[in-house]
Image (cartoon, rainbow, N blue to C red; front, side, top):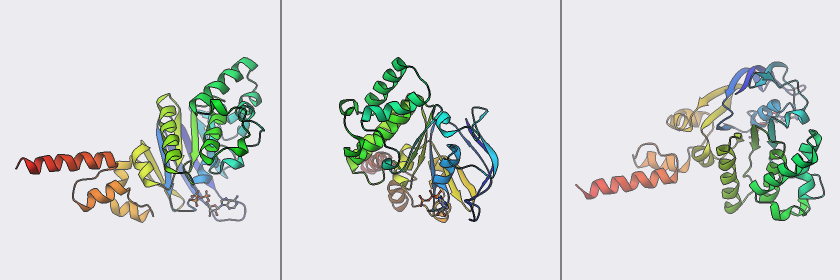
Length: 271
Ligand SMILES: Nc1ncnc2c1ncn2[C@@H]1O[C@H](COP(=O)(O)OP(=O)(O)OP(=O)(O)O)[C@@H](O)[C@H]1O
């Protein structure tokens, strides 16, 4: 469990972004962080990672205070994938990039090799281990950032807008990887503006608004209240919008929508 207690934060000389917030995140799940532009989604993840320090309050992981740990030590518990992978790739090969965190954490050579091979296999990059990171496609770069985090064997992975700028195929590959990692026991915190992704893939959603945690619940609980969703500046997912319009009852995904449409057709046919 990740536990943020009484967190207040502002950047130097700026007004508060968080005013005494409490937040619990179950690290076995996929939790999406949503909210209007500038509500502090990225800042929240930076606070969790210790990349910025709260003016007040603590962050705990499984009962251990992590808010005073140096970021490189925290890599052992939490992996962080920046929105723009170019901001975190610096080694001259894919292998070296992936081996950086476990080496820095003091793992032995055998363990590093094992973790790197596993991380590259998980992310589909095994055949590209000698490539220069900067020559990879955006999707490959994003998965390399994930591989670099995974090699440290973290419990939790934070992905900040991981699909932005990617084409449909790369997006699907990344979301499939996210689900697979979660099934294997890695918790995911996903910052996203994409309500279709949120509705389909998140177990929980945390909405930030007015310096507070405005909502913390399931995607279904959020989108069931259209007025609230709109007041938070969020769009309804496409399937929810269509299902509402045609009076089908809330559907969160295209699959759910097709299923309910087929049921309605079947029941109409039998009348
Ligand atoms: N390093 C910084 N110094 C000063 N202000 C900052 C800094 N980084 C972000 N901010 C400001 O803090 C606020 C929250 O920014 P943050 O990037 O966390 O929001 P966000 O919800 O992730 O935004 P977006 O949806 O646009 O990515 C914004 O007003 C932003 O301009």
